[in-house]
Length: 197
Length: 274
Image (cartoon, rainbow over all chains, first blue to last red; front, side, top):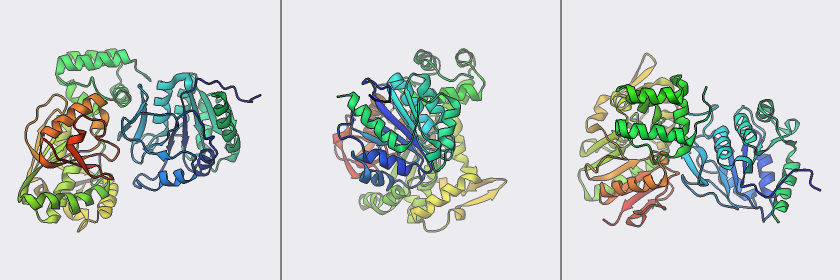
């Protein structure tokens, strides 16, 4: 039996990460089951003025191609999306993305809190939020919003993080459902896939 | 502190602004519009009800409100590759057929892109051959754009962008620093006309060879983007150019097949059909 309490009504997985998350995220993306049933929406801190390279580096490792969506692009099953550099990325009612160049949030653009909170608003309890290693508190509030709206919350095990400020921020703001090492996050993604078969 | 706003309350706000003040935010993208309203509530220490009351009762509050509502975060030479494409491909192409031409900066905000264009044109030696129109919804920000005076702290990113644009000189050659502000040479704005213009409700007011509207329509929903793009199409001479933000696209809109993509990376389109 699965150690996770899962169902097959989820609509999306949203992942936040910053310093030290690249290794974890590539591990997760490279071991995704080919039938993974949900869109994966990622907001990772990145160099503001380097537009190219990052999405390509992730795509090489990933089972699914990783794309930086356009403003108002529909969110689709099997899509793996990355917030583009120097834009905040929101999820809108109607299941599409919206970009914005508003002020930085937590010194970040894209800000993880914005992607996570807007996704929580749209998907409510049908959202899985994962927060990985990172050096600032961005994402903590977004995880709280996911939890408050009934979504499933996971943070990377702080002892495994290169820098654990980000998962610890989430743990201090809300009751996180699972604290997992990367390998167990990979297992969780497999369990999600199985729940839909 | 208000931390979330109900959709119905957002509708009450947009309806009031529309009927009372003649601005139409009803087709703005929801999540960023909500964040802007939350920001205003926090900045001005208001509740939804007190905001509605001020919008209804005060004839001057609307200007303050618009200035906070519109997103005025911009940079000089944002996306240096785009500015290189303008200098090396787009503008030389316009010059093949026109000795003089005109440009519209739609949603010019605090003027950084207008200023970047003026510098680009001066460095190309064609500054006096070009007429520029810079418009924005927000009267307060237009005054800032006219002043071309910015906090010194903004210069770090502006200078980095200019270097990556591979400009001829140094950005510092165009401005003077005083009291924590840098003020650019007013001569750069010699051929620029600033005017208040509403992209949503405003009419087509001129024809242009090049329109820049980068990262403005991202605040609109798709239906409104579609309408505004029709106006841009109508405001361009045949074979004129339209530049939008790097994460915007024309794919979904009705006028898509009347444009040709000339630079997909930098999102520059050419009008090929009336």
